[in-house]
Length: 256
Image (cartoon, rainbow, N blue to C red; front, side, top):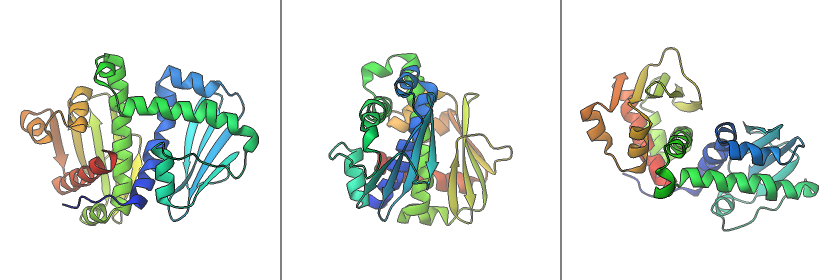
């Protein structure tokens, strides 16, 4: 199995999975919505990575949205390379806007605090995870990022593209009991992430509950053991589930 990490693929994940999860954070966490409401102006922040991804975070009235492949925004942040963008996400460098200098306070008072709050849910402490409400939200956000990242790995990573190349067209549902469903849509060996259910999935992975999701994603539980005892089940075209699992293995390396 490949173990190297491609900075270009990681930049795709950082923008289209991690930063793209901020609207989900704002929608689910009251403290995040309060941060978003702290600046009442309609504001957007775009990220343009040379040789990498592009996208915009838009805020209005305490609601956030992520717009992939869009760069028109109030504040524009360019990055010279995927590696440079990854350093900013890792907190090792500061972004420098080319437009929107008059809205620098938005970056300091809204975007930065939301990013820090998201990190507490995606990289939680054991103490925080002891709270059932926090644990549920953390698990949902982590699954959102993992499923989003799966599409990026399938479309940009060498190993991920090989697995996607073996998958026929159709939807793979990622289900958590009666809590939520995400969809990975395969079309011509390209995968798209949809944060919603699909009426006719060709294959599905179903987790018994959020605690099982949390255990599998954190490595505390063995996915194989959970399949054996029924906490994780599969149906439909097993080839699609098997290759989805291979892609998720690669996602784990990028998100580690």
